[in-house]
Length: 597
Image (cartoon, rainbow, N blue to C red; front, side):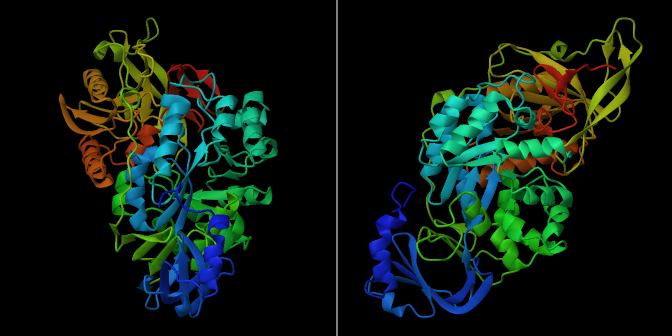
């Protein structure tokens, strides 16, 4: 039963009433479990759930009157019956998977609803790419709602994307059936300064009665933050400390708090609930970004939930944060997020509320996973050639493309360096004194070279700079066409020849990730769709990604989730310093800066 065939509550009401009244048999009855009620925050022993037309008809101590000869019966045997988990903010592309394969990976973990912002593909393929993601999402056996990306480019004037998103694009997308709102409004300086284009996108969303996603990546909680809230964003996931969560909730926003593959922001913010005692209904859990390895090995929203409980949250409160709170925020409280009449029958059976083993997953009234095994098909969209041929380099690159010329007559230079911070999105703006050999600046020690290779318009352009924190040694290069948000190609290396080989290989592959050492490719992850995603199964992609991580370690890298850090080096909306196709960007001032002091 896909999104297109699930009956609406009004369409199903006559039957739901008959089943609830015991006049007609249910399609499915789950018998004798502990009903976890997220509306009242209580666990009620010895209850049945009757389901018809993919929706919940009734929850009561005895619904045997709703069992007919054709009714499927599942014995809960005293287990907890809780709502399917919701991810409030995420980017499917960051899993390196298409929506179908992402769904296949997370359904066994109990995720039955996702709110996804496909702004990665929007930067590469524009509105057409968003439509492809939306259309594959609509085929899935679980709920994948699409937010229309708001910021491509994320920082106008500081980067060049493959496509730009306009207010007209946003208005058109608001007419599509699976669009739930506007994706994160990352251009927060634009909102703070009342940029007409940003306000037009927000207005088109609000006029359609949909939710505006926020992204305020600044520690300044004074006038700029107040101005941003006044502009209309309804939530924010960029908080990193308790004060951030409190400020957002006090101003009527939802604090979306993330535990992704590289973001660990729950522990530092959940104290607003666990210690300060604020109302938890305005606190929402999400992942933001999970790569395939995390999904296969550690879990999805079940991992976030367990982490919140480990950080001191009451299990029932933590459950609200990834079910009903999320549904309420997007205007879907009457549609999903709880086990109550009329809602989509998205249910998890689990024997323990604290550790949450996901033993049986039901979505829209059908079993979709049992004990970690997917039990349904997740249909694929037919991705056209335009989506598979997106890496356009314009020429074959060689080592000379990665030369950094020194100022005339200099024996050494003081260079600006992007400093990677482990487990965090922000970078540090560092400087380093680097030697000059034959007029060329040489990276040394902790400092490696970074290059952004233009890949959307075949210009052959390479922007060079310096980065530190990865710990790379020897002759190596690591490259990726996943480079948030403009998704050009980012190559980091200690050797110009290796960097050229790596870039050319990514061009041949049609996108993905490649790691080189001493003249050989150690590992690759082909991502042929938009240079961002694979339509192979998550386990296959995860295996390649594991080999990629091992290859990075073989090159001397010891950072946790170093690949995520690599992929964010061109994200020109998160401080302090980044690289774009236009040069080095000072994100504290939102302006281009020079490589040398």
